[in-house]
Figure 1 (spheres, rainbow, N blue to C red):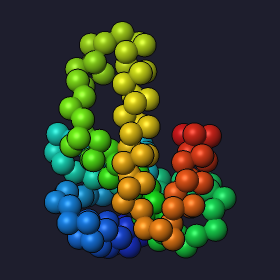
Figure 2 (cartoon, helix red, strand yellow; figure 1 turned 90 degrees about the vertical axis):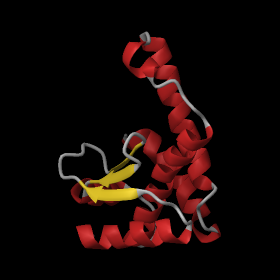
Figure 3 (cartoon, rainbow, N blue to C red; figure 1 turned 135 degrees about the vertical axis):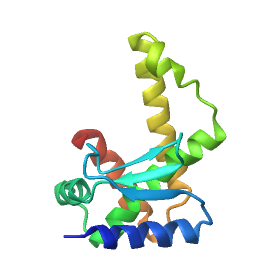
Figure 4 (cartoon, rainbow, N blue to C red; figure 1 turned 180 degrees about the horizontal axis):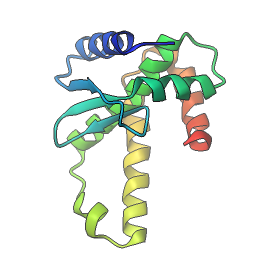
Length: 137
């Protein structure tokens, strides 16, 4: 099991490696393993959800690498919001189709942009997690 301080260290090292100025914090009330909040420029993570998520994966990688892969995807959200100014008002006021379309676009972009940060030795595991994530979440 990876504890909060293990995950914080992975996040800190990865952000430093890519020269990204993003805040991070643990949140036991988070319903997903990790998320990015564009309003606060903050990555939040729930260490119990992260451990549960990586336990479900059938990828032979050290747990630390799997956390990095989850983080790269979350960093993809950061990069997407930085490059594309999505009209997030749609998520509150749009019709169901508009909401679904925007959510799907943001999700797809997060995986694509996140992949640009992944080191070569983790690319195949990242791609495998992308395929598994469609089933798990």
